[in-house]
Length: 622
Ligand SMILES: [Zn+2]
Image (cartoon, rainbow, N blue to C red; front, side):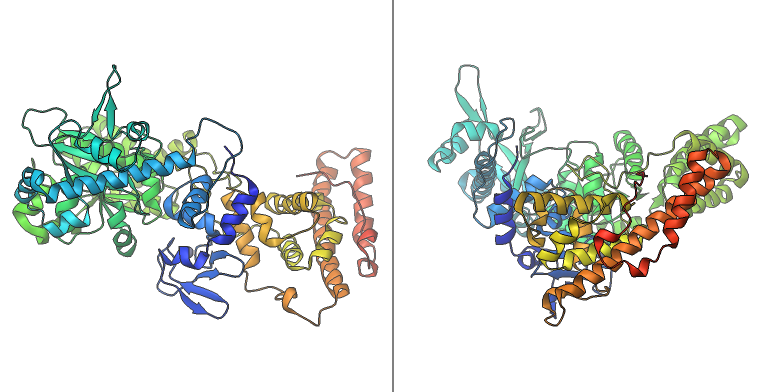
């Protein structure tokens, strides 16, 4: 399961963060750093920094930060291990794993990607050749230009049972890999044949341009299924992929909006018409993972689904999922019986843009539906509608948004605001969403991301001490580390940070900032914290390592002073807690402790000149 630490270090050292980030962000050299427009939030002036020396990035706008792995995890919505694998692959380093059999061997994963890449090539080439005439005719009839076909890598799987199989074998791919990639099927007797036959093929490509799987449409009228997709494989998970995202992600970010459609054809026709921020869920209802993936690029979703009851139901489910990711959705309405592909072909892109412009909020959409059903005409109906709307509004995290919708609904549909607010209060009390745990490392996309925070709530004394410690020379770090008490630090993140330093010191006998990452692995909040501390422009001593005239004694003294502030703050916090207790629970012990603390706080702190002399008090953990 685990990738050995040394290997992770080696890959991190080999990976050039500027090179990797440049794949997504246009970077400009400014002094020792590179800067650019942040890929994680919308901005006009660059606040995204990359420090190649330390191998870290940090955005001073939205607070994202970390190392090269964190960057890929966040950009590509992948796990830590996947990010390590991706970089190993890119820089030609082999990964050997410690233990664990359930996971695919990395060479198998590579082979599967390779199999898909070759398959995409094969289908594409077949389309251009003699056997591809049927496919070409189909694409022409759909109105997709060769330019569109090329940019999406559209292909054709020829009629017959073994065309691809023979091609793949000749390329040196094993039947085993082909079967596990879902490209061939094995019959009970053991013989094998091509999965995709006589179908037009749409490759599903990741943001990093890997072929994950395929969707394929039959050209026969009566053949079932009409669409055949790759089965679930270690590299293709249909609830986590979106057709068109590899092309659309930049446009989605630039326009700060994504248009969701249901089919491959919708994506192709819209992109060809010049509407580029489109993706399709292709063969699955919108999933939380997909919304999560898209939320990295925008929080504004437009549903452009087929104007039929299936489309409607899919949309209603999608609205809830989008709300749960704290994103906003609007609904684009098409004439009955139309889908985006047919609409844009019949009426043109300007008509489509007009529809997009008049998209309604999901709240209006749902309320309008009730109104058209006559539900707003009876008191019972009104109560029912109110309840449903309030349910939706209660799921919004942002109070300003909630207020906006309450006001809007009240005005538009003649429901009293006070009624809406009192229902809302009930609903929110009943279904309070659990606080997102900030310490939770980010795993696969299924989980909610840790909340962004600017570290504002870390006590400044604690953060300052830790930053100074991080920048001090190694010998001083070790010495200081052995003379402090972690209990005095109240912030869980700072305690964790110090534990990481301890762990490294214990394992390696020294502190080495560059290798600290191996102790935080896939803990994204810790990555952010480290990047934060390593690339914070405001700090009392800018960078000791480059200052020749700073003596070790100075460093010790600065750290000691910082530590004393941490201790004093901790004692003061405890003091005021005890003060409360002297009123609510005035036992003799409480009173004694309270008096002791008061004395401690008044001692001559300025006279303390060594770490050993700092009072050592049993502090109860918060
Ligand atoms: Zn940012």
